[in-house]
Image 1: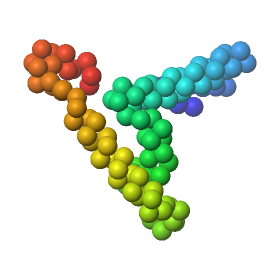
Image 2 (image 1 turned 90 degrees about the vertical axis):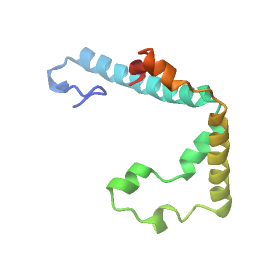
Image 3 (image 1 turned 120 degrees about the vertical axis):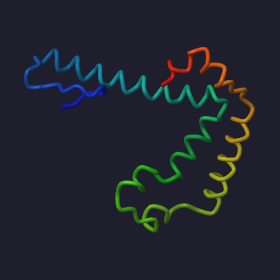
Length: 117
């Protein structure tokens, strides 16, 4: 089994207690990742409930890129009001993000930008 950081873990070599601990740590790690993602959205000032609805409605872009994708099948339950909501949400987020004062050049020249990449 490959864990969340890409390391191989041979579960057969773990004792019962180690295996249980390993699975609990993986659950906690997954929960922390989900909470971190939610906090990023909230930190940008985006309404998380609207974001969640948007993510439920919008098709998975990675799925469309790598797999054979049948739009009629995946999009058949999307209504015109869903499309209107998604369009309005994207516009709202775009306007919200424009409010931020990003000074990336300053951070880059000070050498602090490399912490983010």
